[in-house]
Length: 153
Image (cartoon, rainbow, N blue to C red):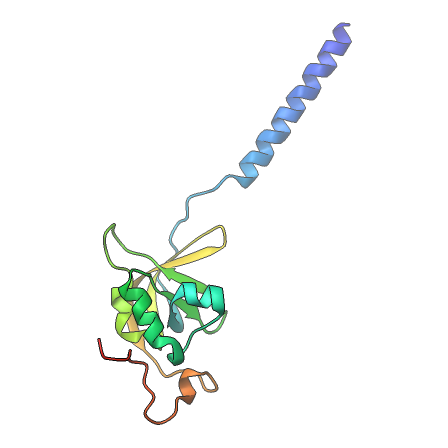
């Protein structure tokens, strides 16, 4: 009888330790910002890009409308295809303000990158426009086409 109790207790302790180890392995660790990084890509509406795959100058009017309605922008990294949501430095700050004038244009941004659960975000410290890569939709705009919203802004 005593051996049976010892075996049961040993098995239960082993199971508990195994579950604790598994839980610890999957526990979330706080996202630490990386050193300031530089990313080159297109300023996009993440909802339109994720749901419909749309980006580029042909959807600029819709992107401005979405942002003016409260949508936060994102940077679509041209090299990796990664999407970086724009994050505010402080609560109440507008994370999209620094890139608002570059909607659906290619930019070089610098900032602190965060990642959790496969989702990436960046607190942008600076943004500058760059020419679109050759062969991209934005680089092949016809004469008279602009990335400004219809009716001005």
